[in-house]
Image 1: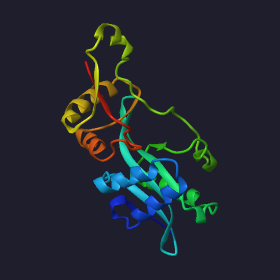
Image 2: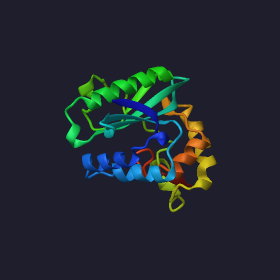
Image 3: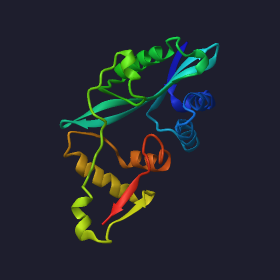
Image 4: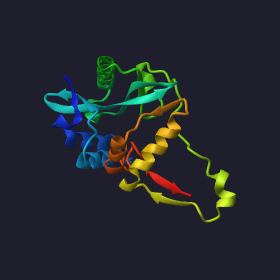
Length: 208
């Protein structure tokens, strides 16, 4: 049986951590998830649960947000993690959950799906790569390095930087082809809950 809901309504969050630990023993997926569970999930995150006799056999996480593409804001959906417990693998659970995620995306009016996971995984289910992984580089550090001497310093991002980061990001993202829309609210969530996780790896502020 499949069911979907906002993730904070799920009663299987401990089972999600267990499946991640089992399926990705040498990666940090499980610790990332536990950290988000302790600090709070974003309000726009969904979970699709594949149940077997009222127990979690697999799950898919999906998060919606607006992205800026070619002068327009479009609703996108990020999919990942997708995981199935070892005892239930090779039974089509991943395919079922991805189909359900596609239905959810259509119902929400999503125009672009961003897939996160192991290379080659999604191609098995008919997905075809369309865009390179998005990155935004505001300035090339080497441009300043010769004349900056010791004036450049790096510090971990903190809450005091939220307004500044939001403003800088908005200013530069409007001038590129593709960028995620991030408000001060989303930056606050990233710095509080998702810092050093799959969503926002080691955020750093550069001072010059």
